[in-house]
Image (cartoon, one colour):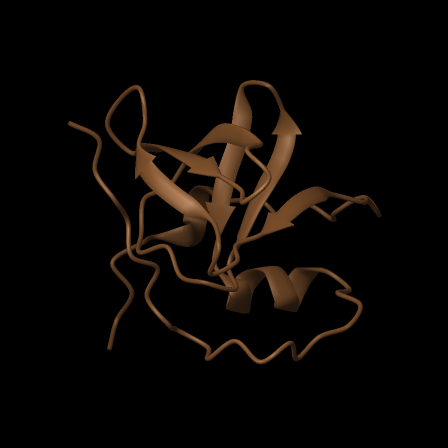
Length: 105
């Protein structure tokens, strides 16, 4: 199948070695609609909360990556694991288990 993207205007860039701040989504977390479209609010069982962007399905075991106050986003587990070293991998989450989002009224 042919890609719908033409890569002729893309240039190869090498990544800098980096560390990331990220939160692994747990079954005990709650996700609600956020302040705008494609924005969600995650609250941990300890009451900590933050908003993040997501353009796809959010699953238990996925990650929320914090770059800065304006750049907090959802990253699938598959992509996160491909690009980061994660200690203690294999905590028993079923890969692809859909996180049930609750909508605020």
